[in-house]
Picture 1: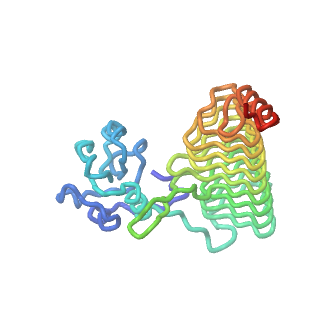
Picture 2 (picture 1 turned 60 degrees about the vertical axis):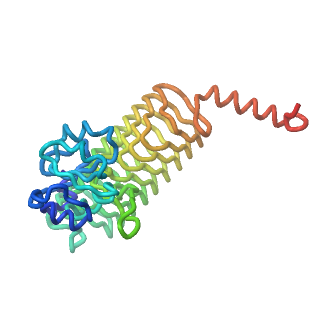
Picture 3 (picture 1 turned 90 degrees about the horizontal axis):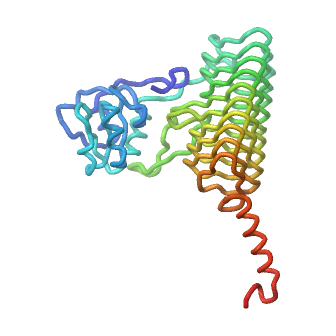
Length: 338
C-alpha cells in the first residue's frame, strides 16, 4: 500500500469500475463486483490489489502473490492463478497506470504556510517564506532556509540543514542531513507509457529515504520510487547537479561528484565513488568499494572493488591500454595505415 502519509486512497472500487477507467476486458463477467483497493507491482501484490504482467517469465511470481486482479495481454491468461481475475488488454502497463490514477493521489498541501497539524520540535528555525505541509515533522535544532517547501507527511530528523529554495516531498529524512540550495527531493521519477489517447504518466507511488549524515548538493534531484523506495545510505555525500532516478538504492559512505547521473533501479553498494559526469544505465549493480571514473558511461554491472572508466565503461587498465594504443595509431604517419 502506498504510504498514507503521502498518498490518499480513493478505493475500494469494483472491477467493473476499473474496466470502465482502463478499457480492459473482464475475463469473468461474474467477477465485475469484485473490489480492489490498491495497485501493486508483482513483488508487492496480494489480496485486494490489482497488478500487471507483461512477461511470462514472471508467471510464478504472480501465482505466489495471488492478487485480486491482474492486467495482462490475452496470450498470458493461462498464468492467472485461482482467485485472481484476468483483465486483458494490449497494454497492461498503461492500464495499471490508469488504475493507479483512479485509486491513489498525492495528499494536498495546506491552505496556510505552516499546517496546523505539523509537528515542529524545539529549536527549529524557519526562515521567511518556508512552507510546511500537513502532517510534516521537523526535528529539534533543524534549520530550514528561505522559501523552502516541506511537503505533506515529510519527516526531517534533528540537527539538519536545509538551505534556501529546497523542495522536499514524499521523503523520510534522518538526522544531521544537509541539503543545499535548490535541491529537489521526492519529485516523480520518469515513467510514461502509451495510453489510448497518447502518452500517459505512470504514477510514482514510492518514497525517498535519506539516512543519517547524508549530504545532497545544490540543484541535485532525487526522485521518489515508482513503487519501492529510493534510498541514499548513511553518510553518503552527493555533489551539485546530480540526478538520482527512481528506485535507486545507494549504500553507506558513497561519494558522487557533480553532474553524475544514475538511472532507475540501480543498486549501489557501500563506499562506491563516482567521478564527475559519470553515468550509469538502469537496473545495474555497482559492487561495494567500486570506483567509476569521471565521464564514464556504465552499461554493465561492476564487481566489488574494481575501478572502471571510459565509454562504454570497462576495467581501468583495459581502458587505459586501449586509449594509449589508439593514441599511438592516430599519431603514426598515414593515420595508422600500413
